[in-house]
Length: 256
Image (cartoon, rainbow, N blue to C red; front, side, top):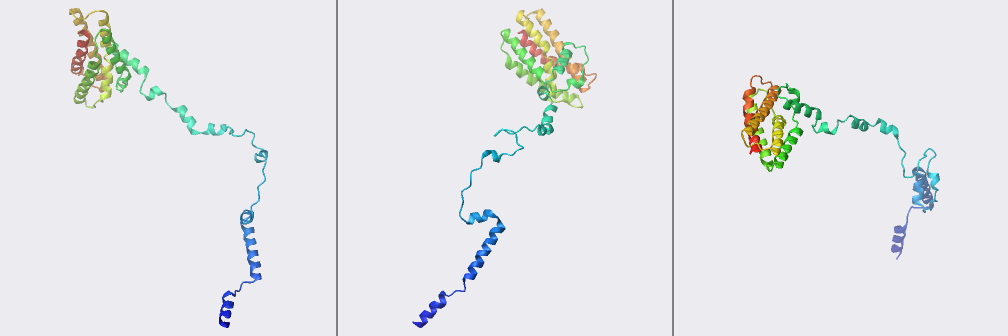
């Protein structure tokens, strides 16, 4: 039994004293001062935070209203995005629609003897050609002929053929959009012919001669524009012949 009592005394005996407990408390208070009062309050008992009036939270320099930010005019005046909006081109110019160029091209087609400006004619402007194609289909419709499919189909196939021919004849080459633009603008005399077919019949000698005149008008204007845009001097008749074949198909739709 003495051995058992001695074993229990040795087992429960410790070197921890009251002095060590006071030293650990002093160390804890020193760590609390090091990390600030927030740690002491977190380690101790939480105390209720008193309510602070809203007027004390607002600073004296802020003169605006709540939930309404003050306007900063200096930021918007110095922002590069505001200046970039002013420097952007108009929407019609971005879409490639220039009414001045459309008017100049229309006058060039109406006057076959007027010299064409190659810099303007070498643009892929499809606003005028689409307008003239729709107008041609509308005038044929008023004459009792629903030929929209033939107008669009012959226009696409004709542009492909003239595009291939011009690329073989010219050294510089030409794009499909430029060919479609020129042929579409030169369709304007056919629109005038189809407008005449609304009020009078063209099935006769007079109508046939009138159609031949308009075919020559369209082919002459188209060949003039092509030789000025592609610098193909002395080859106007070679270009006018396939153009006359193409516009002859539109004349057949108009007369018959």
